[in-house]
Length: 210
Image (cartoon, rainbow, N blue to C red; front, side, top):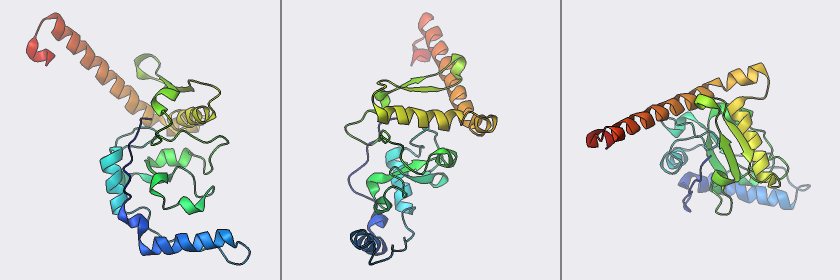
């Protein structure tokens, strides 16, 4: 995971009239749960302007795995605080993130006790609160909370391990093999580039160094 900078202005579809009516009706339902029924949720959070914003600000990458896609249209829309935990945030711009379909299938539909690190939070540091490791030749990505008392970091490391390495079963490991292959491939590409750079430096080849 990397730090993400979410702009303050939300995509327009998230404040469409149907969405505003739903939010007002849901607020009324929360205030009077025995007097009213829960309103039907409209479609709309997976809108073209939301996906365009994901392309521009989140680099068309899954926020959990950093897997790059041609566009955000190829990914799911994740609710950081799941619908089961807080239905009122289903259209909240600050609660929506792009996620690979496989990662979305592996993510629990409720927040774990203590919560998760938010990559868009100004007070949390996903890049430093979690220790990221790779075995030899880019194999077996590992994730561990730097501070074991930071429950959000512990939970996030466990989630990252799950979406990268499966659930511990043979089927789980097989289902996430593609992501590990992409990481291993990229590692080897960087290793090769580093070797070529050092060779160019040793030969004092200015053009190759550049």
